[in-house]
Length: 153
Image (tube, rainbow, N blue to C red; front, side):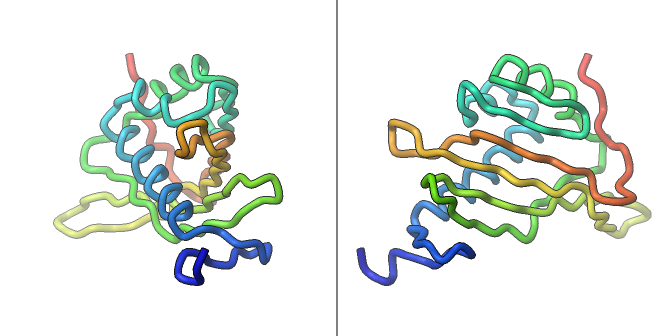
């Protein structure tokens, strides 16, 4: 492995750049699928035994994740969630953690206003196919963030 293939994490261990990019791409894909309401594809990016902690409830496993995702996937018209400030670090067990801040962007009187919305922390584990799946996700609502999630019927 040459120096161009690695980066140093906050723990001082070596993170392969390709793995860092792969998990960051997964976070973007999860957000895209959630925004489109594609719950089945979303659930496929999590392990069978995943745990998701969210202000709307905790899901253990893919079946409960389907139910939780169906409840929180809808945002009001004109509101979009944008991921910002992502960082990747590795854990001693070989998993990778992505931390990110989600900002809500709302069109109001022809100007965009960004409001801090959620803080996310995803722990990824390598799958048998050489990719990465979310093992655990923590979502915390930012202080003062409005309640925006609609309910799916």
